[in-house]
Length: 272
Length: 302
Image (cartoon, rainbow over all chains, first blue to last red; front, side, top):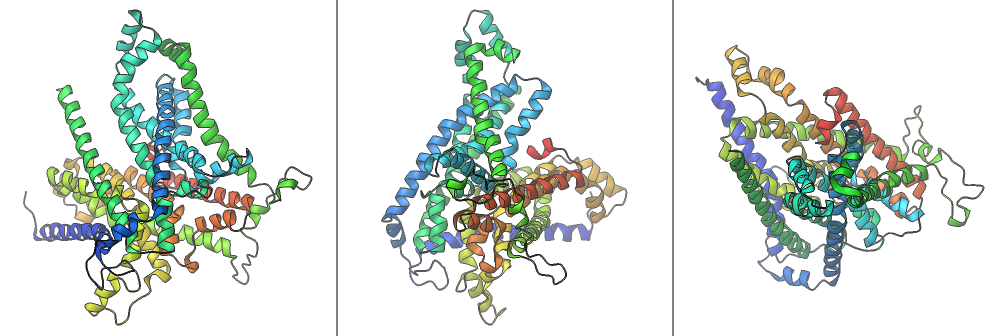
């Protein structure tokens, strides 16, 4: 292939643009993380007044933060416990339906994913308020489950499509009960998707802000805590929290990617 | 239903149907209906609810336009905020598309596969980091005594610090940063499936770079562009935390107006009406995109 000078200049420009793009993507995060170690009371890196790790101590001494963290974990666990069974059931129902009914039901099921989070929160708040239920942790769980169950449904559905139904039929023909066939044949097949969906559900719940904002009542979660701290009482302790969360996210993202690729490689091997 | 019964038996079938019904009715459909129904009620103290004054009314929707006078050009506050939200979200969507297109092109078509894999892994990291933290990082960067002003002053581009966070620029920049990757990944996925031979053939037949993109690449990327635009627009229009952290009273967002009617104005019916207006805006945008890009809902919901 003979490349012209113009094309070379073009590809050089594109590479430069890409470098800029990645700088743009990471510099704000690096600055935020770096500001954790500045002694300045306002989180910044200019001027650098001195290096310290005291803001981690300040963060660890913040009882509100621990309470918010506890709430976020409790909500996350509850959301996993509720949304995974709902999502699995919905996927199994879809899998056994005929085409037309499936299309309509599918549209209703994925609609929460296209609905803005604030609206899910408002709808949940108004509906339960009228039934006499006030905002609080329980309502956060309900609001978040309404759309997180849709993620579970999608992940389990994808796995169900690769399920060999003849295995199930064989088990039933050989005298297994419906419960046995489900426990011994289908569930083991779905298990990887269920675990992945559970992890994703917890993560989605943990980082949710928009739905939580309207359903929380007077309770606070970690995201609510961060946002309110930025508005009132911002110190680098918030950066310290951000840094911890980013570190956990990076670890989680890398682990998830590695697992996903290993799974993809294994599937490819199986086909071959 | 027969298939379900045959496969799982009566007990499991009942459990499956019940669980799905609870999810879709109690957690999805009924709350939306309750919100919409509530938006047609007047705002009454609790004892008067259901009483003779509790009649259906369009008042909560009309209040968005109350005080609008086209002759004098007076726009009421809530409507102005709503229009600003539409304009801002559109701008963020357009900027994201322009910024991401070359990156997606590079990742899908130019870079070697191993490099693409590595760069995608790099991209996943900011994508997974919480929206609030990504916004917060710009709060630090754009602060009056922050790094951006310090750097610009040091290299002599500005003489005095700029108040980045007092206009709408901060909100737009922060929003673009927060939602950009929701444009990049769909674009990349669409471009990845483009047949290399098509581009080569066009080039051999004498088409220039611009022409190749306009006639071959962009038409092929339609579904990706559509999905990206829908994601970025809906996320921007319904964002609360970005305008709350990076905005000022002069750059209020419609979500903030809704929040105020709920928790400061204590006018839930009006808050519900405005929430429905916001939902209608998002649905309207999705339908517009589907028509312009001629893609179906199934492609967007993917």
